[in-house]
Image (cartoon, protein in one colour):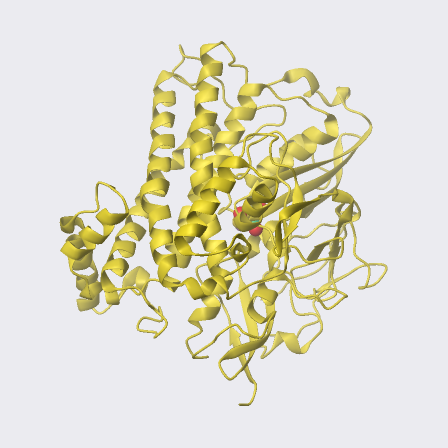
Length: 572
Ligand code: NFE
């Protein structure tokens, strides 16, 4: 069969703009390119600013992983200034990161990814009684009743009768690769709708601590909220009770709805544990001061595993990071072959692709706005599956137990977390660990308050007069999609250099000078076995790309060290 070129643009149910170009040959994918077609320049704005303000600006990079860029920013500045932070503030930050990650994972599963596995139209054929029996076999979640499932089915039927599927329009419904029985489809659709309400409720934790959401307030040297039981305007008895409820409800939904649904759906699609296997290096770095992947602060050793050997942890060394532009629309002063470390980062945009409407971007060596970060010159997969395997490799007991139990139930090996199904499963299991951890973080926070530990801000280094003339710092955060780092250089109290190396940049990068694909590309075309049954309905491709939870808004950034205009972008 002749090779066929296929373009999927835009990939929907992601954040930002991603185009996938493919070659397919007799039902298999033989080549793939990930093209980030979005260009933006938010870090440029922070040049010349007071470093204490950077968090507010850079967190506008993305409203999906809300908070993580602010967090990485304040950590970078605190690292540069050697700024100690009070314990209560560290615990508040941990709670915000934990809840943010859980919310992000649940939204990803139900609202961005589930419909790759769940056929909404098939749900119309489901029997609500049988659906209730199926759901009861998985958990005792209170709304799993025949009456509730009947009402959801009616809502769907009314939408179809009205000639539209509303939020469920334009799926590949009826594709032969949908395998769930109608009852499982109806259960998942009901939980999709419930998850919309749930996520709005629980993320108010960030609003209580940070004033609003998305983009809550943070503070270099502490947190921008105070604790006082006698004051109505602060964290007090009432807000603590509300927070406790949110922590509880977040955990309940993860344990009783999200994880059982993922496990049930996974059991019908086990072949996807051998599809979408990507770059064999998986990396997690985390941040010493905070819990990471459900592991208490400071207990996760940063490292790299290769998916062939999940018993060995290779140490992480931040000097080994470099960003390449071989396939990206940028220039470096010393050419395309040499990578640059983030301390030395440069971003000079130089679009050399065809004018729109273009046919194939991948006809050109440069085809994306995404840079290619590499560690020790190797592509790295980052994300929940990487974190779980890094924790597993270092024998973290709770991770080993949870992962082994889930893998045993599904008949999978730990190394199969490096797959389309593995990334999706890993996200759910991490949420479970994270939700349990969040309960413990909350208990520790409450104990501290009872013991009088209510200080949330350290004024010691707030005044710039107390800073060194020149300083540089880095903040690592394990964001929902993987390892995030912000790198800041401060001269004479102002930011002179700022660089973000972001999870989706690691995962959605293009080719590097060695010709290595980025992880999205590798997952699709690394072994020539990825299926694509019907090029007009590329459901299998969506499954694999969505399994990474792409965020192209996070992936693309722009820095200019001199603060001069660096390019023009024409909007058509
Ligand atoms: Ni916009 Fe974000 C960051 C990425 S993390 S979503 O940082 O990639 O989940």
